[in-house]
Each structure stands twice: as structure tokens, then as C-alpha cells.
Length: 222
Image (cartoon, rainbow, N blue to C red; front, side, top):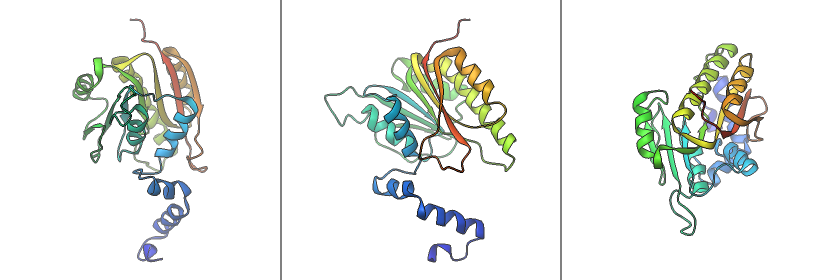
């Protein structure tokens, strides 16, 4: 109850939800930086995107929970010397605390040419096997406006894929369902062989978030 003292009703509601959330508790036990790690774990357990030796770009990486999962799955620390060693690069406008096995580009915009140049330098052969994105805009309270902002972010990932994603690669991006979802799915279908929607059990039931999983990337013909 001490955690509730002096807080607004909304803040108290958030604290109580966190205390009751089994994924929050599990993230503390397993030393993940936040509960979102379990969303990626579930996605990867089902679809096997992250393999030892793979290069991964984590967009909107802060505080680094998805990068923690990627580091484990692609063996970027070299924990298993018998497996190939992968690469993990995380990007965020916010600061991302250091993590062994990951290169973090804090205070970087994923759409900026300077960020692209650094990615090409950090990634083996300038290419990634997987692009991950759990990024989202700060919620304004206007659902359709927030939806449009996030869809725009997702479109920017398709542009990023054209620069760094190797043929046959995969993209996972979060979106909030709305009127522009079909346009995003259509654009992804133009450059990926398979596109599907997935909502992990770790996503809260009252959340509008879903994930698009696009696989078998083929670079557009110019």
C-alpha cells in the first residue's frame, strides 16, 4: 500500500495492474528489463525467426527487453561456442542502458540517413536477417490519430528493409488496429512472401496492439 500513497487514481490503477500482472513478476524473476520480452519470446517460439548467427535490428529498443531476447536467441555473446555468433543492434530516440552482446544507437532516429549509415557499418555485410519493432508513438488519447502515427512508423520500416534486410529476411512490427491497417498489410505483401497478424498472450487483452509478421523478403524491382 505504500506504493499507492500520494498517487492519483489513475496512477494507483496502473500500480495495482502492475502488481497483479504475472508477466511483470516473471520479468523480474528472469531479469528481463520489462514484460514486453515475453511478447517476443512467444513470437519467436512460434515462428522461429531468431537463429544463432543471425543479425537483428531492434527498432524502438528502449529499455532493451527485446534486445535481451535477441541476444540470447542469436548467440551474440557467444554463450554457446559451438553455435554461430549473431549480431544485435538496437535503435531508439531514448537512452538504452548498455547490454552485453548488443550495439545500441541511443538518441537515434530510425528514419535518419546518419542512422542508416551506422547500421550499414555495424551489420555484417551491411545486412540484417530480421528487423524487429515494438516502437510506438506517445499516446495522445485520440485513437485514430495514434493509429495513423504508428502506421507511418511501420511504413518507415519497409523503407529501412529496402536498405538493410537481406532477401528471405523477416520483419516484425507492432501496430494498433484501425482504418489504415489494410494499406500497411498491402504494402508488406508487395515485398514479402508471407504476411500474417499475431497477438501474443503477453499482450494485455484490453490493448489494441497486434503484431504483423512478414517473412520471405524480396527487394522491390526498380
